[in-house]
Amino acid sequence: MGMAKKKREEGKGEEGKGGKELKIITFQVITRDKVLSNDRQVAILYLVDKFGPIHEKTLMDLVKNLQELGYDLGYSFTMVGRYPYSPDLKNDLTALMYVGFVETEPGMYRKLRTTSDGKDALEKAKVPQGLVDAVNKHFEELRNKASIIDGELDLEIRKRFRELKRPRRRGLF
Image (cartoon, rainbow, N blue to C red):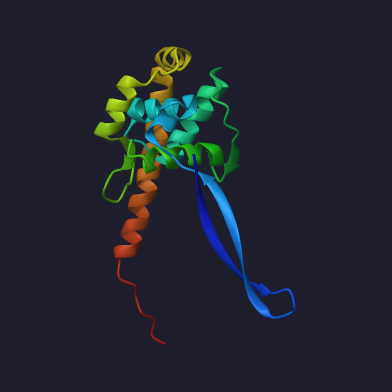
């Protein structure tokens, strides 16, 4: 089931006159059923529930570490600064947030956490057993790495927040 989005563009008409063309762009509609039928999105929901509240950058690192330990979720990563980034993982996370299974905590840190709807959906969904086994096998190692990254990110956020609150000193000239 798709949904069309209309976009108008200014341009020259057939006879050189200014006119408008109508382009139709289609995109996939995200529903809760589609999210629950997508193994990767269910896996991400499981990880947010198991390790959350968690920063998005920490989640990306966690998934990359899981893949390096042998459980491949099919994401490809590039390093952005000190942290791995996957556009596909970001899209899956956006889908989970869109349907209300994952939310960001209010406040300055904005960590990801599962909602009550997400927890209910996780009970009904079939989490890949290989993922559950891999997480259980390497839980301490993954949790320790995630805690360190979350702590670093919290420290960076607090530092930036203090800098914003601090009044600027005006120079003499």
